[in-house]
Length: 243
Image 1: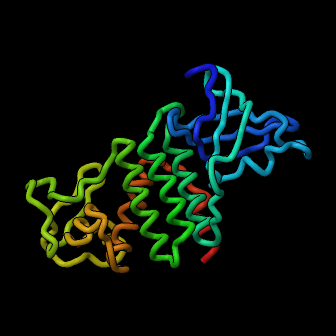
Image 2: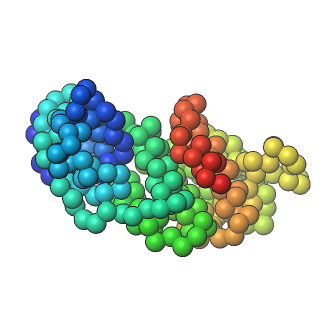
Image 3: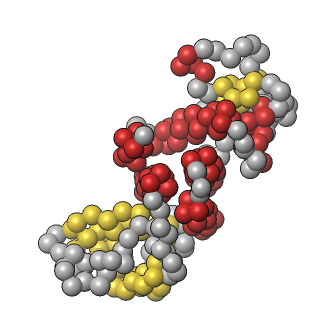
């Protein structure tokens, strides 16, 4: 990594105390991916950075150093702070946790940075839970694609035939959808069965209806959990408590 980086656009993902008055901050950078920086003296009562280093604030940061831990030496706002509240706030925390756990350090994903920035804009203006659910599902989809684990949604992976919107499919993680010839299984076993029109609409960005969103949520939760490798997201616990 370069030893001197100037005014890099970032979003703060996480901050934790470090030594007496400093903090370790994890940021998502447009050009450098996930970076961990030491913000020295930031926890002092007179530090100007205390109110600046906040999640969902577009920032310009400069840092120096080599290796996995570098030193922050300048910070400024790079636009307006996204005011997230209630479910939108929990959703933003969920996005941050996924990036924190799933992105490797110094592995740039400029397209994903754009998706994340747009997701914050959409969460801020979302009028209801349905709108928020849409933001989350499509961000999860983009995240998996950028990590190299994109979902196949347009064809049956066994027959290679296009998805039929009127048919039922079983989604096999790590492979893709397979035509299911039978009625929808009952109970817990139905979590990765999706209607063809759900798969196609999700692929095309036209997902609508509570049933389709429920099917896609179950699919994305399972797919994300595979990548998390058993890690538990605190934001999911907060979602349950908020309900």
